[in-house]
Image (cartoon, rainbow, N blue to C red):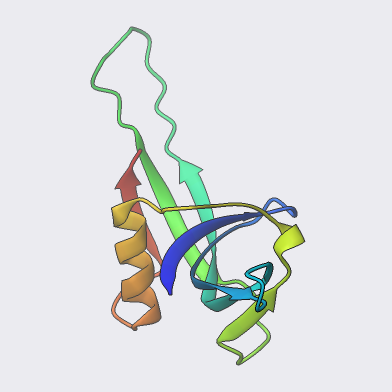
Amino acid sequence: MSVKLILLKSGETLITDAKEIVTEDQQVKGYLLKKPHKVSVEQSILLIEEDNDSIDNSVNVGLKPWITLTDDEEIVIRPDWIVTLVEPLSNLKNLYEEKVNGKSSEMSSTEE
């Protein structure tokens, strides 16, 4: 398994340990998501009156369990619900791994 950032048709962005579920003829029938978390991003806004190259480009990133009303840690999702899978930024991947292992707070910041 590997940690991926997944964009769903619903517009939600998930970070999860993902594994393809394939048939004998190598067709992807679904994805097994282990401890999926919804990613929320809020960009800091700084108002200035002149051009400045030292503008703060930080964002606040929040992670919370994707389906909060279950104790299930593994969820199967159909491939037609996934728009794309990409590699997360290393800071985001570290934040996710620390959170699911119980070593991180709910919110953190990362550079764009």
